[in-house]
Image 1 (cartoon, helix red, strand yellow):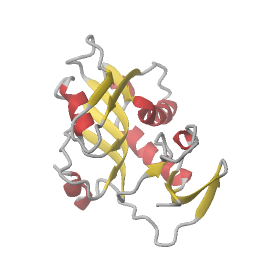
Image 2: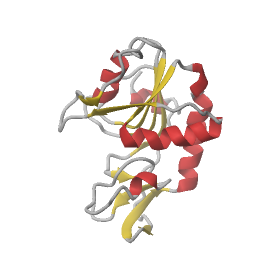
Image 3: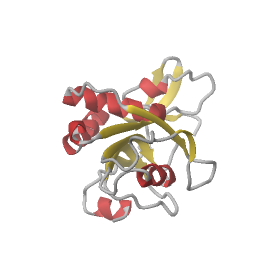
Length: 195
């Protein structure tokens, strides 16, 4: 089932970007508020209710972005085991994956949960999921509208659908100069004021 079909059924809430967004200052960066920390906390709680970490043989966290979501859900579930860190990137304009830190050999084929920040084209998630058991699942905080030719990923849980803008917060960088990871730890979603 495609992301659009999920949304039609009301399974993934969609929150459009405000036509008159508030400006917020975070560590001297002026940004546009998209979703507040309180709103994101509710979406994370909803995801925590859907995926119980302790039922998986392994929990894999993709890069820095996935670490934020993992930490939030682990706290809600009082989950104490460290995740397995992997690093898969989407190549520029591509639907595949560039692999820097692969799924460990001893995890391949196991029933695992992949935690990531965003479901864009689906190329990265497809690559990671192909290395795990067919029943494995993925959990991501956001997906975006209007991603052309998005690859369908089965067994995926998504917190919220947003517009196709460059966002920061909740594990995601904002792509601004001198950011120094400021937005990865911010618990809401913001948009670069210059966008």
